[in-house]
Amino acid sequence: MEPVLDLAGVGFGPSNLALAIAVEEHELPVRARFFEKQPRFGWHRGMLLEDATMQVSFLKDLVTLRNPTSAFSFLCYLRDRGRLIDFVNHKNLFPLRKEFHDYFEWAAERVEHHVSYGAEVSEVRATGDGFEFTAGNQQVRTRNLVLATGLEANLPDGIEPGERIWHNKDLLTRVDTLEDPRQVVVVGAGQSAAEAVAFFHDRFPRAEVHGVFARYGYSPADDSSFANRIFDPAAVDDFYAAPEDVKARLMGYHANTNYGVVDGDLIEELYRRVYREKVVGRQRLLLHNTSRLTDVTSDGKCVVESLADGGQLPIDADVIVYATGYRPANPAGLLGDLGRHLERDERGRLKVTRDYRLVTDDTVRGGIYLQGGTEHTHGITSSLLSNTAVRVGEILDSVLRGVAQQQAEPKLQAVK
Image (cartoon, rainbow, N blue to C red):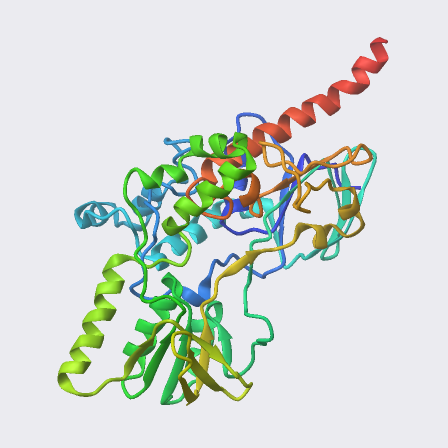
């Protein structure tokens, strides 16, 4: 029988990758293993567009805010790749998204001895001092679980993905199936939607590209210095301690730092394209504001309906791409019968302690920690990269305190 783990990580995206690095760097040995159902590391591969940049500073990498001297930093990655001086001369805080993905892969290779790929977790059960579960063909025992199962694609009610209906997460993996499309529709008003509109407009010079959104226009992201304080580690303490009505107001005030907003440079670029086409008399970038998509069929037929006057424009689309965001994966679904032991608030949301541990009844002795899905308790950074390095340090500290307490209990009982 394999020894009991101190922690088992479920999912191996950037969040649990950062936790694996924290384990690797810890001064004392930590028995940890991470289980990922995919065959290799990958992060939003379908949206790694050639010119797309990160929306967070490179200093908010996997480690720097927790350990500025870490050998796993983005700067160490650049040195290893031979681009450190080039990046410094670039004078830019925001790397290409493809470059940051390569950084993640570089880091993942260095901790792969902690990871089992192609190992989907199922049948999680509580034991006397922790949990047991199946991962692929392995039987695993652990004192603590850290769930980082990522986000699920969000599609409007009644919309099913298919040959001509995609979520933007599949953009690059499916775009080569299109042969000289004439009509492309992109639904959404956020960064991914605007990027998809620009991508299709560049990629297919004979296609009409329709952007459909309920707003009057794309709204710029608020990345000003004071507003960005909502992503500070200290802001998590403030948010967690705040009354529910204050939490709701904070989310409302600062939603425009992350949700349904677009980088200002991209907004200006799309406007230039629309205006240029008006001047030359050939309009193929068509932005339908205050509108929605209705009567969508699996073969790409749809109607753009104006919310202002009810006017309708039928389109026979080669593809409809929904850039309509994501929702956190439901941890209760993964935990099966354990889900009934999780405590919830008056609105049915999971209760979570400040150290990201789910509140359970007394029958569950091990710790279950969440990386993501804690926006209602910890604020806007719940599923974002901004606070990942700090969050994993807090989770690891909490896990090891609990392990030390469990190991001390038999000794205390013996003394009595």
